[in-house]
Image 1 (cartoon, rainbow, N blue to C red):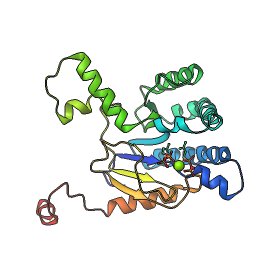
Image 2 (tube, protein in one colour; image 1 turned 90 degrees about the vertical axis):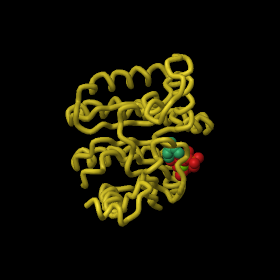
Image 3 (cartoon, helix red, strand yellow; image 1 turned 30 degrees about the vertical axis):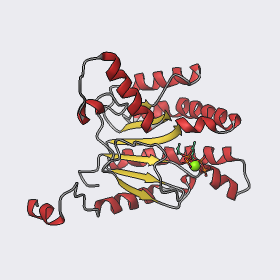
Image 4 (tube, rainbow, N blue to C red; image 1 turned 180 degrees about the horizontal axis):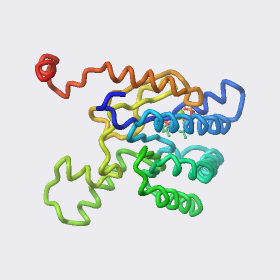
Length: 236
Ligand code: IPE
Ligand code: IPE
Ligand code: MG
């Protein structure tokens, strides 16, 4: 892995279609997807990645059938309780990103506990976006700034310091599975210069070796940030 790759974002999509293809209810896709996540987190730990942020449930996903939302929340709680010790032993630091006000109290408790237990770990920073919306994050940041009244004018770095992702580097690489080529409100601010990797693989079928492929693809990108190719070569 190249030194410049510190942060990977993943939009874990395609659980429902994975299940549908097998004539199974959508929830089976979510269960299988959770197993995939476990393997990917292990792999990120193994390769020494610093930050992994996964999109687990978006603000817009509350609009899904109540039964699916409730199953997803239950699955989240179950997996969190099951995996927390192992993640802690592997020195991972867990953080949930998003609006916490609508989460059920039991899940919120488990989240607070997981964050507290792992807060001093310095291995992989594992961030889970839950009730997350990139646009909403910007709005909540601006509202906090207005309420505090400390800043007459804001800059990019001031705004960034009020976002949920405060202190994290922006994701250099964002992966979306399932063939959709959109961000669906994931990291809309932080993705300004991200390399975007889209794959047709449904999330439950996504394997560590495909993550390696995405990283290899990333390593071949020329990241110009507005400059010309020649300017970059001169600096080498
Ligand atoms: C992603 O898979 C998981 C969540 C959004 C919670 P989907 O459930 O969106 O799967 P598809 O897109 O319907 O296949
Ligand atoms: C986006 O997935 C968010 C997650 C993967 C959690 P969706 O599958 O809900 O996104 P859209 O609605 O197809 O854009
Ligand atoms: Mg989807």
